[in-house]
Length: 194
Image 1 (cartoon, rainbow, N blue to C red):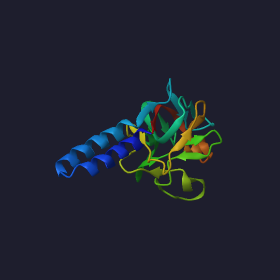
Image 2: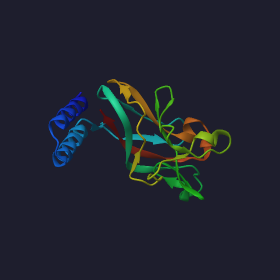
Image 3: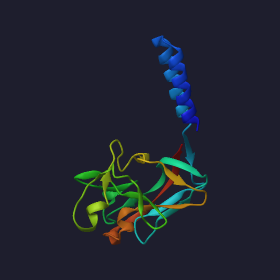
């Protein structure tokens, strides 16, 4: 509602002003008002931790009804490891093996384990067998980034109070070579509401 009001204000003001300076100032004000109409909200009240094997997903419950543009995960502690015998494979959000050290391997799913994030805008790495859809890349994000910021949904996701969502290490979700995994990452979950 606030975004719509801001655009109506812009249209009215543009029709009343002919000076480019006024338009620039008013455009800035409108952009600022639009910015105020979206809010990052911390979803969890305690750390959400997910492991890398044994169906050890982390779950969180939506605290506020609304429309969400995206979620981001903010690293708190721990690591996940796709090869327990080698500490070089440890990372916050994926599997740090060479020659692809920035493979991300964390999904947000609904309670039926259907992927919500990352969106199809992520660059899935392919591979064979069960690895075909378990690792991906997001521009500007590495497996060691302090935040795992996902792309926006093409259409905001409607959520309601009490809805459960889950965080999965992808090899664990698909039981794909999860037997040699180790570790647990703990995170805060932040939602961008409109």
